[in-house]
Length: 208
Image 1 (cartoon, rainbow, N blue to C red):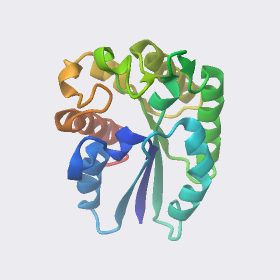
Image 2 (cartoon, rainbow, N blue to C red):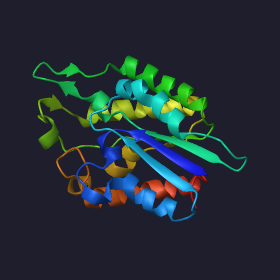
Image 3 (tube, rainbow, N blue to C red):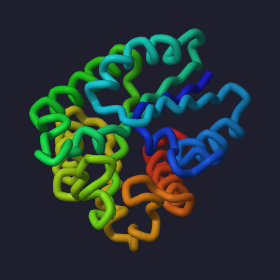
Image 4 (cartoon, one colour):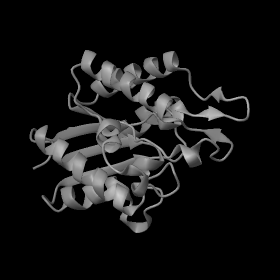
């Protein structure tokens, strides 16, 4: 068996893209048709922060990341952090402080290493601040998202873990047209994410 477990929040889950289920759903269709024993798990839960993910990680990883035969292969992909970056309420209270976030990301890496040596991170996506400065009584800014994205990038570099800088890639596009509600991508946006991530995973020899 070759399993890919993708942990994240609503953008991993594919919110806003119906039955196509975002970039993860598209990758699942591509990957699982390659081999009868290929399996991709979408473990994105809307609203999750890195703290939430830490609470459920061991239970979900233990159930899925298993080596039974010599030829088995298991990969863990993380895509988490936008919800950590948000500010809450009128007082703009941080959901997660950056120092706590950094510790959480390192702990997730340490935990993941107990299951597999193949670990990757997908970076965060920019938002439309004309909408997200007041999004469901929360605030998302590109400045904070980039701060958290760069923290992940630095931690991945220190741990020799591949990191795909989605924030940088998306920022170079006319990405406002790729968003559904200012925060989550629309179908075209998820398609673009899928194309970029697929290319990255091919370069890292995760898929072919």
